[in-house]
Structures are given as C-alpha cells and as structure tokens.
Amino acid sequence: MTYPNFTKDHKSLMAKYLTKEVFENLKGLKTKNGFTIEQAIKSGIDNPDSGIGVYAGDEESYTLFAPLFDPIIEEYHGFSKEDRHKSNLNPSELNASNPDPSNRYIISTRIRVGRNLADFPLGTSISKEQRYEVEKIVSTTLESLDGNLEGRYYPLLGMNEEDRLSLVQDHFLFKAGDRFLESAGLNRDWPSGRGIYHNNEKTFLVWINEEDELRVISMQKGGNIKEVFERLVSAIKELEKRMKFAYSEHLGYITSCPTNLGTAMRASVHISLPKLCKNMELFKSITNKHHLQIRGIHGEHSSSEEGIYDISNKRRLGITEVECVQDMHNGITELIKVEENL
Ligand code: ADP
Ligand code: CIR
Image 1: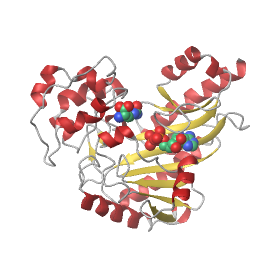
Image 2: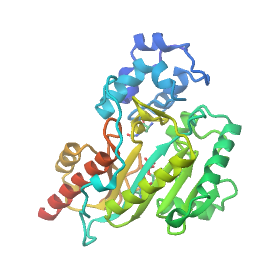
Image 3: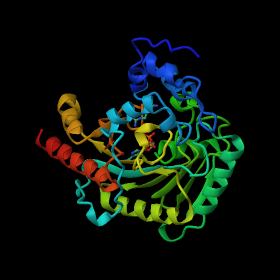
C-alpha cells in the first residue's frame, strides 16, 4: 500500500495525523487478528467528510498503531497517553434534577454505552462464525435478565421490513447501510448476526453486532436524566456479572471507534430549541463550553428537523460515567435557560 492520496476535502483527524512518516512506520504491521493500518484508515479515505476517519480491529490496534491513534485520542477526548481512565457508576453522585420539569423542551433522554466481548476481535475484523457466536452469547445472557430489564431478542435476519423501519424511525434501532461503517468492514454479512433486545416498554434496549458488539441503551420520554442513568447502571451491573468485556486500565472499555473509548457513554437528549437554533454562534458557544456535541434528529451524520437536536457529551475517556452525564445535564440546563430568555 502507498501513502493515501488525501485531497483538501479530507478533514478527519486521521488525515491530519497520518503523516508520511507515521504511515511508513505502520504499514505492513498486523495485529494478532490480522488487522492492518490499511483497514483502520479505509473509512476515512473512502469518506472524506469523516470527522475521525479511523477504526480499530481489536485492543492491540490501539497499541500497535499508537502513533496514529494517540494524537487522535488526545485531540478528541483531551486525554494523553500517560493518563489513566477512571470509572464512577454511582447514581447518587450525579447532581441532575430534571432540567425541564414542565416538558416544554426535552422530548426524550437516552444514555448508551458500547461494550465488546473480551475474547473476540472487534466487529471490524470478526468472522461470520464469531459474530454468530457473539450474538448467541449476548442474546442468551440478555434473555436471562428479569424485573424491568426482562425482554426479548429480535434478530434482524427474518425481521419484517415494516417492523424494522418503524423501530429505526422511532429511534430504537440502528439504521442500515451506514457508509462509514460499510467502509470499515462493520457491515460485512449484513444482516446476519445483528439484532435488538428490548423490554416491553422499550426503555431498556441492547443492539447486538452493530458498530460495537453491544450497545446497551436506557431511554424514555422527557428529561428525567437520573432515572435513565439509574436504569442503565443497573443493567451494566447485571451484564458485568455474566460477561467479560474488553477493558484496558489505560483506555477503559475498548470500542471500534476511538471516540467511544473509556466510558463508551453517550448521554443525550432530543431537545427543541426554536429560538436558540436561529443563533448558531451562541448555541455552539454553550455546547462547546460544556463539551457537548450537536447531532441531527436521526443520529450521527443526520440533520436537524423542526429545530430539534440531539445533544450529548463529547468526551467519554478520562472522565467518569457520572461526569459524562453531568456534562450533558449542566449544558442542557444552560441551553434551556438561554432559550427561555431569548
Ligand atoms: P449512537 O448513540 O449509538 O452513537 P446515533 O447517533 O446513530 O448512535 O443514534 C442512534 C439512535 O438513537 C438514533 O435513532 C437517534 O436518533 C437516537 N437517539 C439518540 N439520542 C436520543 C434521545 N435522546 N432520544 C431519542 N432517541 C435518541
Ligand atoms: C467519522 O469519522 O465521522 C465516523 N467514522 C464516525 C466517528 C464517530 N463520531 C463521533 O464524533 N463520535
């Protein structure tokens, strides 16, 4: 492989940090799962509008290809290679009263974490058979949960198209055909091995074998952030009793995209800010101050509809789960205050 032909449209952190020298050092290297730098950067080359542009194949990718991953991780999370990740899943330490008790702005709240099984490669380099094994292990484990986490697993394979589309439209299920994941090899053998588990109320859900082997999700209507966090924590604790997840003292939970390392947590609200969205400069000054990311209404790389945004914590590594949710809560509280005064 030769050095990629980056154009002025390639704006990702990968394009920024993959210098000729770094590339020369990394080309030809392979992790024990056979993952190469060529595979790692393919998504960012194929998709010039990538923000990050790189995926890992396994935990070893983060050390073998550290000259590329380290500066990307440092810029995205503000986390240096000497830092150690930390965890705090204690809901009583979260200071988060509902920022919108009269339900005027917040439509729904969702908090998710990514997880991958310790004994398997990540989805970018997993085989079809291993993916099936992961699906079996995870879905069987989930179906042993009880109380408010009790539910059923619905595989994508054989799911009626109308049901699938309505789950996607209602924000419960991942979409199909994401071009960033496609180039990263994360859509291979689609739809086999993929699916969704959820309880009856669809307040606790788990995606299986999308970008990560598990995406554990707690969500509900309105702005009761604490209740959403408590449900997620109880689920994480139950799952950790039953499965071993890929984890490193330095990087926390190992995920295929470096933006998700650490807590692997994205805590978001869908929020309507009809006045503030007319002043994007002010809007972004508040989200930047609280380390928040603005996404569109159908998730990453989608656009906003009717002034409704998905606002979430941007940093996930080097800060605790409580701090991720606290960032989101504090920023949302300020956004609502400013909206009300406009
Ligand atoms: P991820 O959360 O896994 O990073 P996406 O940005 O693709 O991925 O979002 C996944 C789905 O979750 C999308 O349908 C998105 O609209 C939905 N979603 C995100 N936040 C919320 C929220 N607060 N309320 C309802 N749905 C949400
Ligand atoms: C990209 O580079 O834009 C995609 N591969 C997605 C990156 C993850 N997004 C994020 O900012 N959390």
